[in-house]
Amino acid sequence: MAFPLNLHIILFLLSSTSISITNGAFSEQNPITLPTKRMEKTTHLHFFFHDTLDGKNPSAVRIINPEKGNFGTTFMTDDPLTEGPEPSSKLVGRAQGMYAWASQHDVVLLMVMNYAFIEGIYRGSSLSVLGRNPPLKDVREMPIVGGSGVFRFARGFALAHTRWFDPKSGNAIVEYNVTVIHF
Image (cartoon, rainbow, N blue to C red; front, side, top):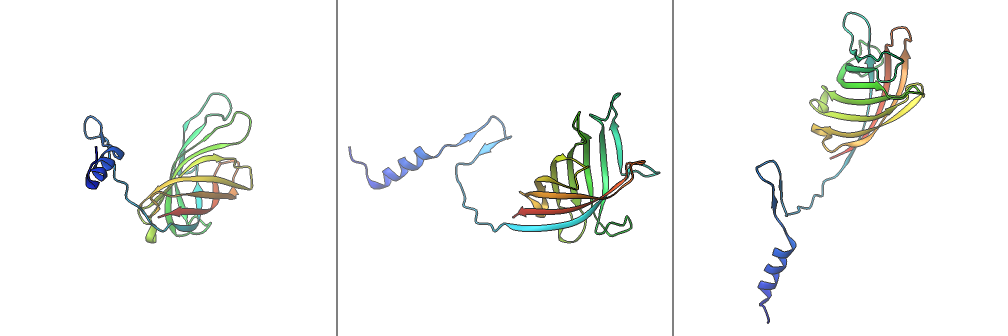
């Protein structure tokens, strides 16, 4: 049986698409794929992370303290991010999240952190870091796994270098060089 050309096109379109709607309004899949030809940008950021565990107004507090050793010790942070290494340097954002001692045998931290920016074109945008941080290494690399605002769909890496550390208090100033690819 011969079908007119238009009917062949309609049958092809109907057979190659599917619409799936779940119960309720939580999720809907749209069969139409739109081409996206956005240009990706590469951004380099340089800032300093100030982790203060002592004093009247600490920026990091211990929230989990195991009975034996450091393994599992966890800190919640709201650390200032500044333009320069001096604590009085211009504030460009906050490091909000947590880090925990993640190894039973080595000095290794698990970083779960959002770098929320408050300055310039990055104001209201953030980058998310999730990764392994061996703080005794001179330079550590951690993945950027996402972002928001200007950094939506971000991916990249952060290089951390401890500029100053006080073993008595645990306070530290860490220099960050971040490379991010985003739309």
